[in-house]
Amino acid sequence: MEDQYLSSGNPRVDYEYRRRRNKEAMRHQVISFAISIFLTLVAFGAVAAGFDKWFVIPFILLLALVQVIFQLYYFMHMSEKGHEAVQLFIYGGVIIGFVTLLGFLTIVWW
Image (cartoon, rainbow, N blue to C red; front, side, top):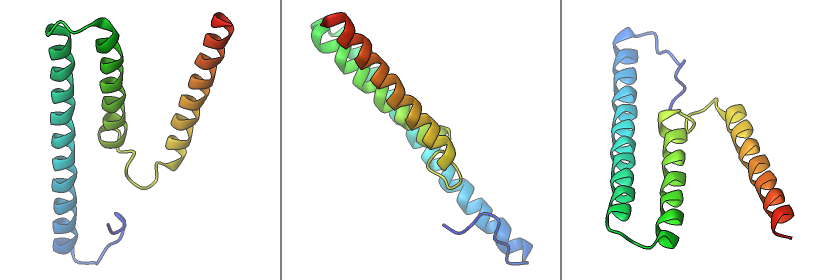
């Protein structure tokens, strides 16, 4: 995509470009929202179906992880340019949280 601050000097062309970009962004938002709702319904269905808890709990956690990724990349606009620092902090926080959890689990179980 072109840079959002690029201007051709023609207001009509800039308007059409912004309108096309906004339409595409809205389409991504709606698709992501629909997928999130679908994943939520699948999680409710897994619980309502009465599957074993050893299947349901990891399955729901996996669906939650997928939803978090959708939320970050589409609703929080992290897939766009200029969000590299935010991505660094989020990924760093995830890594630190995972290492901390792994450390506590190791201490408790050994």
